[in-house]
Length: 227
Image 1 (spheres, rainbow, N blue to C red):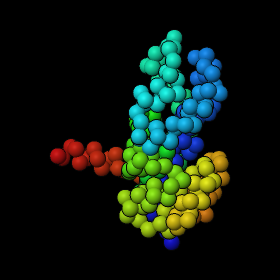
Image 2 (cartoon, one colour; image 1 turned 45 degrees about the vertical axis):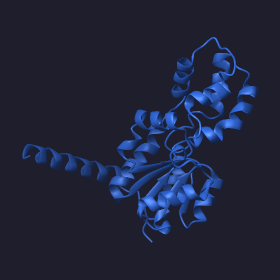
Image 3 (cartoon, helix red, strand yellow; image 1 turned 180 degrees about the vertical axis):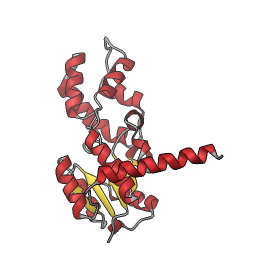
Image 4 (cartoon, rainbow, N blue to C red; image 1 turned 60 degrees about the vertical axis):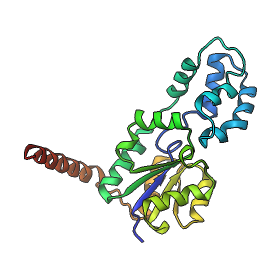
């Protein structure tokens, strides 16, 4: 059965985790925080934060600003956003696959509102993703099966025609239990091969995509001239 849609995670696939444990460790060092206490508080409220049940201000109050600090929330938020880095090869791969194979692209992610929106806009993820199913929007998170079911309902594509790229094996397995074709992402090259095995061939991909982009750009220019 031909794959007609790709579901993707953001953290660990298109971008780094952003506000994962390594970033929090860096924050503890930069702001002279007690990492053990910070991680304990993070564990207690991260579910509510990523599910959109508490705000960024409330999250920071619980995890960092539960006592007087020598820095501001704005300074800490700036540091948080600066931890996000892209994986350019993966971003370009998904862009090219969308063009080459006419795929519908959806992001299924566990991220809080503020960081999710920042990352999408900063790295222009919305330029090639058709829709987002983020935990803060639906108010539940992976590995809850419902988040994948919402994505399937929005895509209007049968599960066996959807491939899902994810760097957490358990999340891949949950998606597969619904009939989605899972791709456990560990690195760029192995994911390319797994996609090819699903019929999303990558031979001459860059050349074909470049020609199609130029043709679409030319058509849009002509259309604007005659409008």
